[in-house]
Amino acid sequence: MIEFVPLPLVDDFLVNYHVGHAVLALFVLSILGAIPLGSRKVLAINTVLFGVLFMLVVSMGAPSTYAFLGLALVVVAPLLYTTASK
Image (cartoon, rainbow, N blue to C red; front, side, top):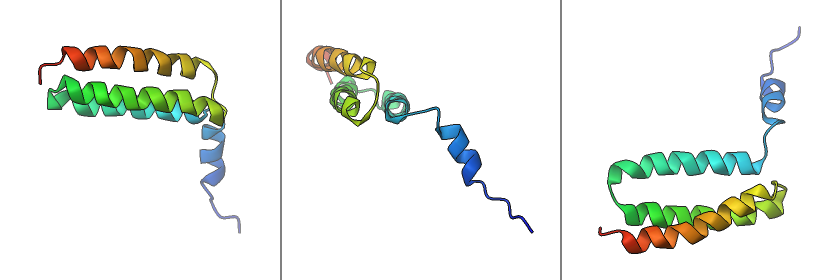
């Protein structure tokens, strides 16, 4: 009797994605989770941390476009932090 094993189904789905996609999804979810807090400083700190993470994820096999995204986030986030009032 052949048992149903869902692991090949999951593997077939995930083979098209890499670490950069996962970090991008986490970044979007963390931004959506931080918006209800109403603090631009929290958003700026979150953006800086993910900017550094995007620049590091390129060493794990992600395309170099994630490094450019990380560099842009690292440049924009301090501006967001300095203009935040609370």
